[in-house]
Amino acid sequence: MSKYLYILFLLLMSSCAKYQVVQEVKINMYHMHNPKKGAEVILTKEVLEVGKWYRLKSIKQVDINK
Image 1 (cartoon, one colour):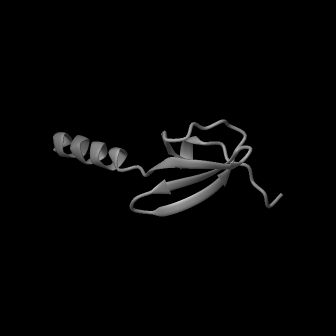
Image 2: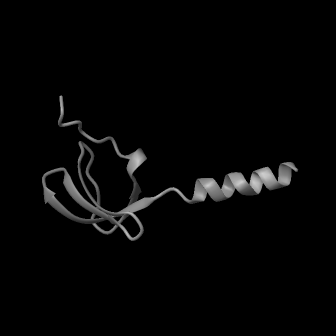
């Protein structure tokens, strides 16, 4: 039984959506794309590399609503 739970856990963890940085729109503003979920534009304090894949949860985004 624990073997099935372990396999299920691995499948869930590996399905986290990754986005590819398509371009840097402005300084620290990035256009990102995921084939299944579409496009996102994010503002962050981090420097991302164009062409690399990132998880949105792992990027510290700037909240513009403050």
